[in-house]
Image (cartoon, rainbow, N blue to C red; front, top):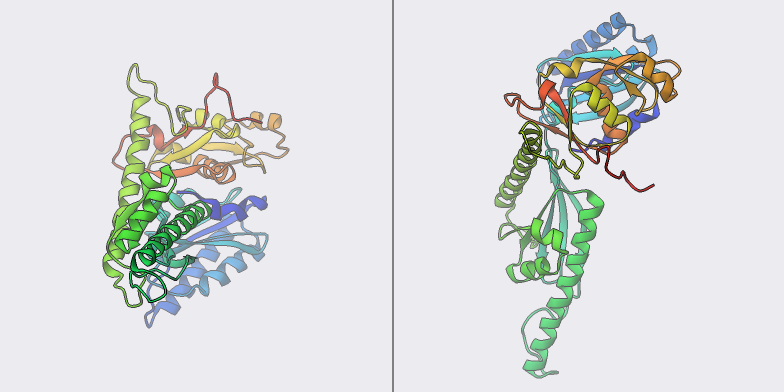
Length: 383
């Protein structure tokens, strides 16, 4: 998963109030339950030392959260008397969690968001395509591609010979497939989608597939379910979308674990997500984070390293395992923080991915690891 939606948290220095709450379905008592949860969260923040203005902002925000079935919870981040960001959660927290700390408490987010691949679906016919984006939060329109609308049917008229007319129809289909394929490639890049699904007219769908860039051709999945026509059934298309999203998540996790296991295999040379090896252990991860080398931060629920204390400054790359390290990084007033909070903040700032592995897996050791962009002894990114 990418956490770019958390970017607003990088613009403030804190300290931060963080609250994780479930958003229950609407019932006769849900309103009172929300008010009680909000009041309890505010009391706990006050006990931990949060400013009065921030306590009031969080309490008021939690009390007015709308009950909903999906998503199942919210994470709220506030500082200086203002709620800066609310993040919808795909899994409800077991209990409300509140925290007043130097950094936003990001540690619970990977598990509560889960691997959430984004699927771009193109509903294709001979005149164009409708685009949709689907993730755990639902499906939303994502624009259209429009080709020529005439001639697209093999019906002769009196103005042309039948052979000449059929030739024009074929040319229109070919041209429209190119227009749609170009639009698919552009939309895929713009949206940051992880998977691509082509549905609708079989002939034009295959023609579009064949005109995609090679990387997208290998990634694209075709299905006969759904379509562009009004009233087309979406139930089977929804199932196919969810299947390929889950398949991507399983494959993504398996690939990361394979690379981590290779680091523990004598004689193996793990390449890492971008050919840069792997890192485990807080000191190695902190060093890599400072140098913007994290490509994919891998977290395992319950790992003891996640709560290990590190030292941080205002900048996301100002972190160290000892307070004395921070003076060399320009931090004038270092503060202690959880390792997972500091590393996740760094991942947001450096556009690194975050991946959660099953809690029963033994890797990464300590609960925190990373696939790196590059290692020492290899050339770093071009300046």
